[in-house]
Length: 206
Length: 197
Image (cartoon, rainbow over all chains, first blue to last red; front, side, top):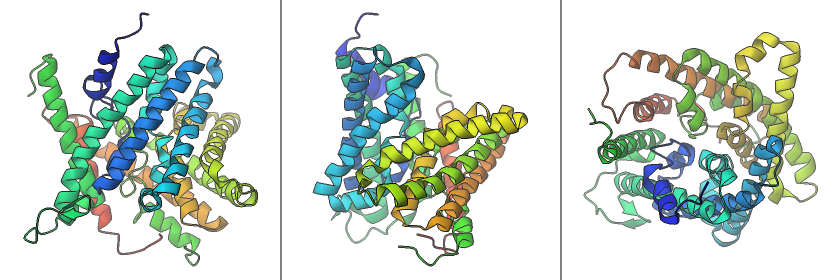
């Protein structure tokens, strides 16, 4: 198989094969961390780091890993980078680390990472794998950030903790509750799939 | 810190007020993927409950008797993942040996559970909230039961949905998420009853 083109790999991750609304992976953290934009940004950066690095590492190991223990090796590679991330957060951003709680550790079982290692890094050279990790991370990130902006504005009237909507805004508490996360993500998935279908031109959305 | 909760309270709380799926958003991937069909949903729910109860208890022991005394908490993620993977393997072999019928019912779902975030999430919550042994076991079982309840309820609703006419883009994960939102609202109504954090 010829090495895929870098730009194409990147765009696939961001839009055409977007992890959230195309592949429906990594939903847990999408819902859990999007009530505050600050936490979301940290989470997105963390995920891009973990996805890109573990994709690249596993791609380097792909020819020496026996097939039977592949999953275990994948989990160990991912865990290594997530532990590094967790330690860095505890050291430099202790408050956010406390807010995110178990969700940083849960990047390990984030299906995006396992899915990309399995589907892409196990059959591609390191550089495209790295780009694929970044692309998927960005594709995941822009949806998360969009949802977080809406949820934090509607729920608290603030952005990054700075009041933006003024005193007349009645806090729409539902948006920062679990139910609000489900509704928002459902609507975003709907909208993105609709746009994607028009773009793909395969069939007219009903 | 949560030293004074009765294990039974934690079990009920983990299943209802702190439902691991609808309040903590864990195990969404398999929830969206497998909730299309009642039989599969019930099977996966049972498997998750089993694995979560066992691995939560084991992980409590690993955490308290190995990681903390030897000052290796930074290896917690890897240790938990290894315990979970080993639990899943052993349970697969044990179930195959002792109850072939259950094995055929759960067979395909067991390996998938290693990477189900509800399991690792449950174990991490257990360690963050500093439960003791009995509380950890109760939390694992309760969280599993709550997940089971949620996925079976969703599978029931989705079976009815098959007859409905939905916009193309909304069909599948979109509508499932919105229904999950309504379910989460219903569970939020129970939130005042118990607090197990």
